[in-house]
Length: 83
Image 1 (cartoon, rainbow, N blue to C red):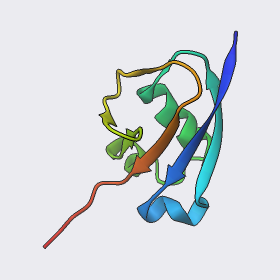
Image 2: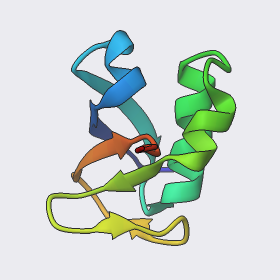
Image 3: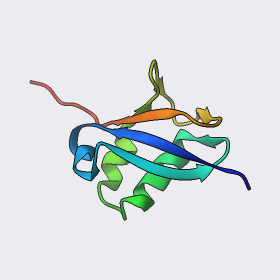
């Protein structure tokens, strides 16, 4: 099975893991599967936060069903609370 390496920019609480994370995933994988791989990479740290966060490309927030086809720069954006 062909794989691809994604670069994921970190924001908010995820910045503690660095400015970017590198993640190897199967070619044509969904955002849902990428979130699962992120949970594995971070050894379960922030599992629920990853589930509640969104992944975005340069222009859009991507739904969990979105399929990534090749080299794509993504950002992980945790939910934000305001007051």
